[in-house]
Length: 217
Ligand code: 5RP
Image (cartoon, rainbow, N blue to C red; front, top):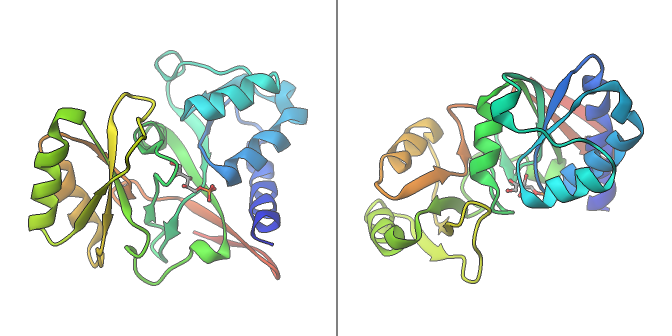
């Protein structure tokens, strides 16, 4: 079952927590398993920087201190899931809409560990619609600009990010050059962040399947 594999991937990240002072924690169902597994170890580290209100709530409920990134400097590790992963460890993230804070924490961390079940591994990114966080007043402008680039933006209606913005999910992208596309999208006025993690890809991917967990570096 996919959820058992998500838990297996989360378990594989636990040894990386050893000797860490402060952890970055992502968002999503795979990370929820990781947070639950962290609870018994909470006295071994000072606390966590969280990428979403949902993860913050879960961390605090388990008694794990949540710290402000501005107060803690560079993080030892960041553990998060992904929606798609390629063999260069470039990712599509943001299915849960937490992409901006996730990208900030990934940038501020020494070691980005991505945990996922094997269904997330793809030969080419883009089948999963690429989430883009946008300032609300720029939604239509950004959508038109992305359409002109060949993507098909769909507004994630009734969804507001933790930062008060909206999400456009971009369909029909065949992402041949992830870094180039990330840079192009970042340059559109009104775009806050794209869910493409190519310029800052994962350092390690822990991929769980029925055969066990594989480590990609
Ligand atoms: C949230 C994310 C998640 O990491 C991604 O959507 C994977 O989620 P899950 O672990 O539930 O499959 O990027 O913004």
